[in-house]
Amino acid sequence: MFRFFKTQDNRWYIDYPEFIESGGSIDDLEMVAGADELLNYASKGKSEVFVEIYTKKPTNFDYHLVYLEDYYGGANYMIRELGFEAWLCYVTEIIFGELPKNLYIRVVNNQNDVTNIQ
Image (cartoon, rainbow, N blue to C red; front, top):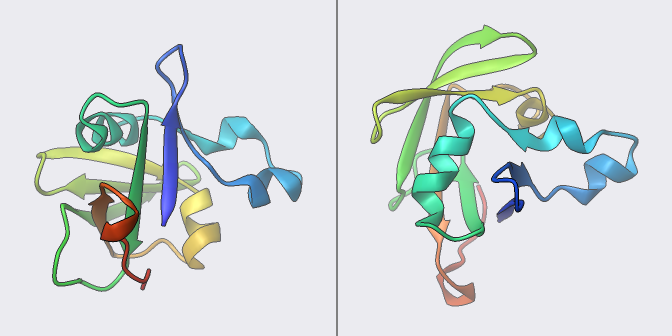
């Protein structure tokens, strides 16, 4: 499960302390170029959201992101349910070991909603 949070200046970040501890920059964890808009939808106005992200299609998901092309240290993805593109930076590749062709996002509303990440 992944936690994303919005700062008081309306900037979204992934909560990934291992990345920071290994010498990474908080700036690299900011969600921009459409990824922030996806989080605005997923969070339903809240300042944090928990999601499960799958590379194989699960039974239940909220958003399907389809790889379009490598772009500027990451990749562009089309968010099928919302009809717009989002850019995901190279941190995606660090987490998954590649830039997956498909990402499926399931918004988790509470601890009882959690399943295993695949």
